[in-house]
Length: 253
Ligand code: UDP
Image 1: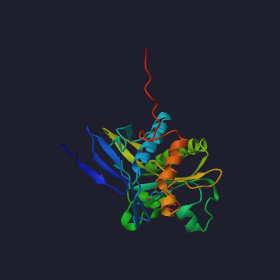
Image 2: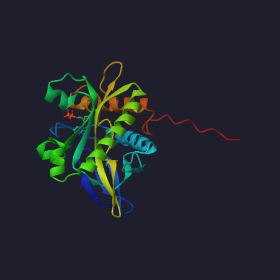
Image 3: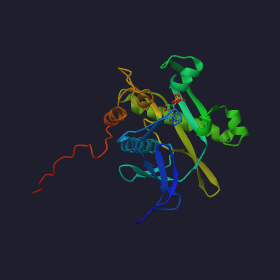
Image 4: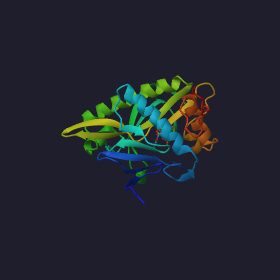
């Protein structure tokens, strides 16, 4: 039996060697984790939904000229991506206070911010992904000042795109996290949006009811995570093919 090489296994995804050099296959698992993996569960169907939703967002970004690592979806759980050098930062964009920001500053969840705020955490599970200032990032060589300027402008473009897409279906984008990768074309380096964009990495609130449609449903035991993600997928017209209504074949005369 043919076997492919596993390159990396994370909490929600696995990366396999791709069919061509410079490519990888990104597999979306059903595993859900929260609080730095203290809380775990298998949420049936989550991987399929996130694969579809991620494809939808990455394709949209490509169409408006925001570079990403995404090439194409391969099947229900897998997508083909470009191999990139991941910058060890979680780039978080916030439109309203929530989660760790609300806690740290004693703000009410949902309080709006004077402008979108971009912040960085150092990707290290053992340390709990600590918030880091730009000074650290530059001093420790994780990225240059030029990289950071480019990362902030990419993050804000993703924010405008995602906020608009969500607004169109009655959902408020409260905050989200992206990761950025470096792609080398000979001696030239480009920064691209990498990893994933899905309800696992965003806060999404229904604009009318305030209902949470993201991973906080799991983090805070608010109900079915699959139902929440399915609602987002339905509103965006993105449904996994096994659930989509298939029209009956028609006879052609
Ligand atoms: N986030 C993420 N992965 C992380 C940390 C945060 O995807 O390891 C996302 C999270 O889903 C939210 C945003 O980044 O949409 C801001 O998260 P926050 O800093 O408030 O942390 P949390 O409250 O999730 O611990």
